[in-house]
Length: 197
Image 1 (tube, rainbow, N blue to C red):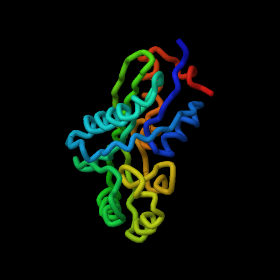
Image 2: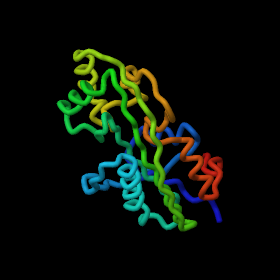
Image 3: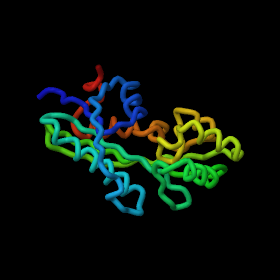
Image 4: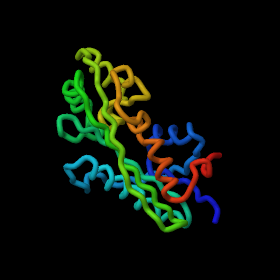
């Protein structure tokens, strides 16, 4: 049996770039799954279920493929945050986060259609945010970057200026944990090098 195509069930350019950086060129097939359908207060459970739903939405389109779904949220002071709805929400979020920390959860689902196996896991990384002025917060929000990201920041973009340190997996904060992906592939019986271009 050959190596199946690697399908990314996400429109996230950051996730695609992460995969490309490590030699995996995914077929990108956004799920367009309505996340508002899922109401769960535990962040680990929430990201796992959302990543699973995204992968399940896309997988019927492929006869034999390895479909990856991911979803990220930031938990700050016990409250779960996805992408901010608008600039005002992003501003409030940054006023709360700055000088504090949050836990970034990313759910990872792999559906292996060729071997009829599924794996669902999550990774968590603690992110410490800098103390920044209201002027800087407003300038950052005006770039539009915070509105596209869970937690209202992009570590690999301008938001990286405002992250003092992280504890745990760096790539997890960008959208998928590369070490976790490697372990999940191994658990399914693959070597990550099988998917290199």
